[in-house]
Image 1 (tube, helix red, strand yellow):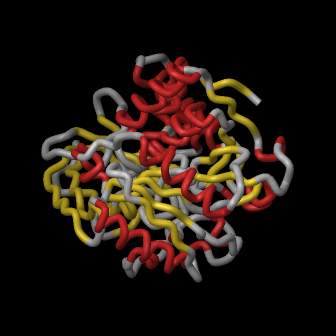
Image 2: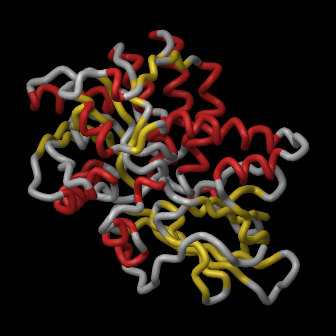
Length: 358
């Protein structure tokens, strides 16, 4: 058990921005929400799931929609507490704790704001240790843990609670509901027990996120050896450095989709193409895929090592493309069916990180 204060928010936010792999919503907005909630209600207690009784109910909370919409339609904040309490009332159980469904982007920080307001602890775990665009893309799905019942709420007070037969159906219903509610909504799903988190979740995600942010902050301060230390801690590597020369980005089917093309600094004839669906999904060096989902593709500003979100991409930006391995908990039977390249419609085999040129 530890207390998370406003002094911890900046490093956690930086790590969350990186693990968002371009998606997960603008962490800056969620950072403000978390800071305000902690200032108003006091520090948030972060605990391990094993500290609770195995049958204690844990509820998640997140924003669902398209990052490009969330950037313009700032959440009010009340919808997140509303989604959690609506699901709790539906279940007839008071939650013992809150957990982020994904440690990546603003969905790392929103649970802190909700936990502070409800005076509940936050579990140091999640189901992705990165951001993914679709609801079924969790290690809980691999374990057969249902996403429903779930609740969704908008900033106007509209609330929807529904049960589903599969996690894939959960995604379709949630996405359709999000489109109708404005593509920047609160969701509470995967109402798990503490025992299910211990058995099936990705433990220590919040701590990992903070440690990652701490090391990336050292890079940004220009500390000697910090870049190598950051890559060593994350077991990552730099795959490409260049300038964005083409950008196709659109919001369709409830997602921010597109392609960004980067021209290599040292060889203008060499380009990297990164495919986007809310997050960066596949990186092609020329025609060869070199980083593929579920491993992480992170674009850092070449000058200051700031992670760049998909909605902040711009022509002419100078970027480094970093590849990080996904959490080891993903490497279970069937994971490529859930989060591999073909799960997103790309006829590409999964490429285990390694090789490639800078």
